[in-house]
Length: 149
Length: 149
DNA sequence: ACACAGTTACTGCGCTACGCAGATAATTTG
DNA sequence: CAAATTATCTGCGTAGCGCAGTAACTGTGT
Image (cartoon, each protein chain N blue to C red):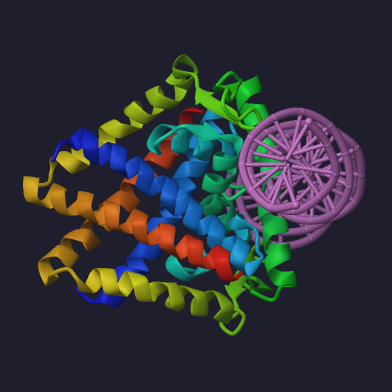
């Protein structure tokens, strides 16, 4: 297996993920950014503030405020002023409101589960570790891209 | 390795790819959709028409026209009327204009190359096959999501 | 040969996400 | 306690998107 082939396939893979995210958003009648944010809220370790959401999504602080406005209005999250630092606003997901999203995910998950079930224990361990490494690498690349602009 | 853990990690993985795409777009001062389209133009088999681009990106026909407008204006693609069916417009990437994009990719690729080089031949083959399967699965899921809406 | 349905791409319009710059409130620093 | 810093929010202009309607072309049936 040539590394170049892997790279080429990575690119299709990336494109396909972006399309997938788009399709999920359209289906839920939400903006892709909103879906991305909700995903982050369930996938990343909390707690979350408006600023942290700006960081995670790559939006400016103003746009992050509007993003939280939309999610709050739609009932996906609630705002709480932080008691110890009253400038901060803690943003907390509302589990019941996430139901549509999690239901859709678990519905879609079935296909993925089946795919993962096909692998041996060792293979799954490899995929898992690869994903972790990729997430970490992406994080670095993003920091670099934003850094020198 | 539990399948649930893999699923959870998949979600972070997806989110991280979306962020990566966003960062690449910001860096090139292009819209994420435009970057996605250019990726598709190099990753998918041609030929491309405005309609096919609408399909690939999930945009409506009108928005796809505007997308091609932007890319043409920026010099990334050229339009050619199809000789055999003059309703169609063939959209062709301009290799020289893609240079920024491919340069950026090969720069970023270095990190990925290093990561891939760490694996054994067999492991790379597994990852490659997994990506192919995922792309195919995404394609199906997207079709399903768009289908019943 | 010709009318008509279907296809492909484009245009006008309204909505809304986004970045930017400035405002406001709270905290930290000297 | 004043000044600098931090976290969030607001006003405004720009631009991408979907929708609905339009124009150009193709294919089909009579």
